Length: 301
Length: 301
Image (cartoon, rainbow over all chains, first blue to last red; front, side, top):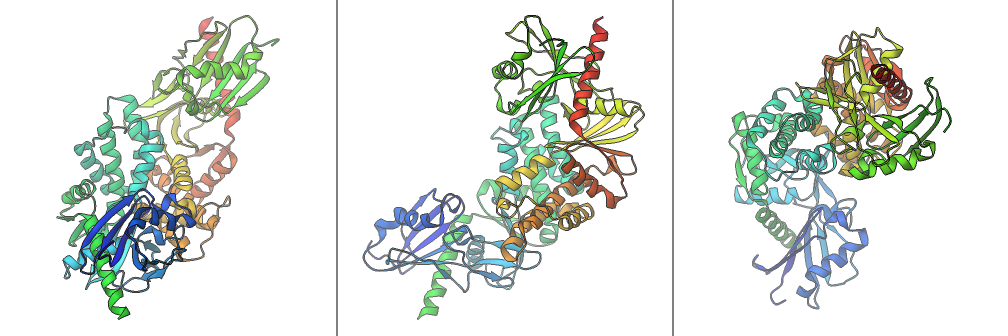
């Protein structure tokens, strides 16, 4: 591909997204597939990448800079972590082995925290992008997803962070537990959601009991599936807010993520007196990768 | 089969157990299969039963009395519920339709509770058996399992009860979530279990955060899989004890269930000043079925 300078890659558990970049930071082309880290064995990463971007390559070596779960222990190669507090994606890329000599495959470091133990891979690049847009941000960035991250940001650094498995728990309960018979709606009742948030924040110790109550209420009354789904979502996000209260209480909050999910979190926080701002996540990942590439390029020259 | 008077059936989500009974309440033969309710479509129940016990039948009709999830909405037929407070399995069997005229197929009622909404199917028969052994029991019976039941018993009746999905949550998290990479041991570290119980009972609001910490600790330190498994089990049973505190605080507790699981619950309760007694569950189900059959027989004569 003419003018190709490097390739930016956002490689998560369930997705692979690639961007052909020119030297000026413009996107020449993009491509994506479902070859996420979760579906690939270690020797399948390079073929998956070549299937997606092979037609962009010429005869010269090209730097590919990736972030996300591609650097996990079950990924292409286990990439390093940076310990917080630090500026994300700043130093310490890990080079992955390749058979194709044209690939200079680099993986950005994740973040780690010693106490309480925690790790992130991918979200640090979104945080880097968010900080580029708003360099003076002082507060908390929440990144809802399969594993929601809450990151305390100050002076351009991630000071500490916390992971809550709300998205994964919701999917397991809604699709694989006995509750699946009650929450099959694609709608989510807002009133039931709000009530469950309030209930779990005020009595978090009741969570374990409330979950089965969703199924029982469906069997004994005419509870609709959208009401049950709203309640399940509210109980789990409520439990998350109970656990992360030290993060969001009295701080400025920016929510980075897909609009529907970000809206839910903003809705849950509002009655707690928190007015969160919302920012789409995909753009921020690419922006973070571009910034990390710039840093690498400067360090190399 | 000579002397066959009736057939007792314990039919749960994942198992089917049948007992050929004589008129004196003695077991002539027994059989079991993995044709649990969870694996059968509605028209597959009768064939599954006939595969297991068909060779016991002669030409005369025989009463088959069953308890458990066979009477759930996804079962052979949705059997009635008795509302608490009541003596379990006392009245209101539901007759299931059969093609084979030799089967007089009866399903015992489950228990229901209006507020907070809750249901049980199968455990009420174990409770009936437990009360036969100890008719003056006044306290709480805990029945750990996929869905643990806590039942408040007084004057031979179930006064109220509460269901917690601890077993199902543990299985989903240990086998299907990101934590599966950390808890693959079959051992369970007792110290980690005890510490997690204490932690969750004192700070139940932190549960949502603590779960992912199990994975992070495995990645960042040399945490063994048995320690991680002990911690996961302790966090979830701790959350259950936090939710059921009004049930076990200051009451006599009898734990009915498989020995390994019953021991874990007894261990978790001990530091809370609760000395629970332990009772194997399988015998009690059969005893409950026999008592319910006696009641039916007397009512019919």
